Amino acid sequence: MPGAALHFGILNRYPMRQRPLALLAALLAGAIPAFAQNKKPEPPPEAQRHDGVPQGKLVKATFAASKVFPGTERDYWVYVPAQYKSGDEACLMVFQDGGGYCNDGWGSRAHIVFDNLIHAGEMPVTVGLFVNPGVCPAPREGAQPRFNRSYEYDGMGDAYARFLIEEMIPHAEQAHGFKASANPDDRGICGASSGAIAAFTAAWERPDAFRRVYSMIGTYVGLRGGDAYPTLIRKTEPKPLRIFIEDGENDLNIYGGDWWMANQTMVRALEFSGYEVEHRWSKEGHNHNHGAAIFPEAMRWLWKDHGKAPVATHYDRSKSRAPQYLIDGEGWELVGDGYGWAEGLAAAADGTMYFTDVFGSKIYRVAEGGTPEVFAEDTKRCNGLAMGPDGRLYGAADGGIVAWDLESGSAETVAKGDASNDLVVLHDGTIFYTDPKNKAVWRVDTKTGERSKADDFAECNGIGTSADQTLLYVAHFPGRFIYSYRIGEGGALADKQPYFYMETPPNGENPAFDGMCSAKDGHLVATSAMGIQICDQPGRVQLVLPPPPGTERRTCYAAFGGKDFKTLYVATGDRVFRRKVKLAGAMPWQAPVAPPKPQL
Image (cartoon, rainbow, N blue to C red; front, side, top):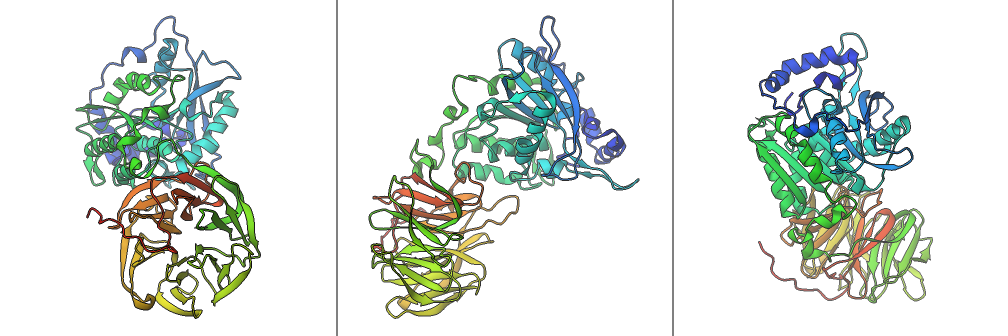
């Protein structure tokens, strides 16, 4: 069972009736002998009891009501420090494989360390929540339970974070009479091996809930996609996290990867992107000897300056790719919310942004710095929008392509068709639009209204053009690529290639590549389930902007607006956001722009 880190306190992770099977599994995997061979050091002074130090209360309980991980049962422990006053908000630290951290035997002895550090004023009053992985009990005698540890811990995505935030923490608060602060600066999370990557993933996915991470012998390898993290860290807009990483050079080197090298690669990636990261290395193997010995040091470092300076002030954005595209201090601004499905964004010549509410059959407009107002109603579920060289607003609606006059609001059907999704209108008036229903990309001559099939394309979605309008880009909604065509005479498409190699969710969810726009310097800005992906001309993702805070749906459309076309607007289904950026939009309805030659 490589990577499972069945270490000290192994049997405490499972309900009593399941422990014989858990022990058998550990013995068969060789996990217990491997750890038993390591000589355990003496606990550090901070992990030992001292006279005069108030002792917090440690209580064990069970939780079996998860909807995120249905059918699971798990033990958990809650430590409430002696200094906690009922009704107050306390800091919180969550531990994966919880039973191994809160016993008086050898190990981190986290509750004792907390007693001593809180008493010494070296960390704030902090509640400890020690959570074991879930187990689905066997349905009959002699059958094997389903052990959820790798699924919950090694799995990518936000499932485990949601379990903690929506279920485990609220349950523990109610059941044990404490109140955890909702401020993410007041929350830490810790784990070892698979528990370490679970801790990091929870903070990575939800930095609005956890910002302090202690990772011991972390499993950032190819078990369930964790080996993607170093690349994602380098390419993603930095998040306000503080991370302490520990590992030993004799850690595992097996089928899933090399733990020792992977942890060093993680540190290098975090440093590259400007994160506040600390690390300690040893010669230990896949065990808690070193991680437990330095646990007090890690806690002091993670909680340093608490209450004086937010974690967000300690990372250096200038070291990442972000400064090339983003303006320091400029974040996402909510433009409007409460829409059925906000999509198609398109800017007029004065920078006014238009967008659709597909389900509401409405088009809204919003001036730079303003609030949305209804521009058109009964739009036949218009989806994508594009400005035309004639100054009209074109939309992909049920029944064909419609053009609206910006002054009068009158509408005209310029091309009939039974289905359309997204569209782009070039400087010469040529329209291209995607038709997922009929698995095609269509071309429309606005002078004649003639429509012709440009190419067969199953599951096509977002569409755009290069800054010089010689290339057409079409997103494959469930795939990995955005495709590129050469635009020839008369709008004929040729030389189709799966050109832009996009980042996809490591957990296997639909990447959902959708609306896109181009910048004058040749960059492509595309929306996806992971957020907004900025690509260079050769087709490589340079930076990923996570969905704006509070977004519950995927990012589905992006367009440049504002008077200088340097404000990036993004639609996320029920909401629309904007953000000033360094990139300037290349508007397809304007004359083509010749971008500089890229670095190949």
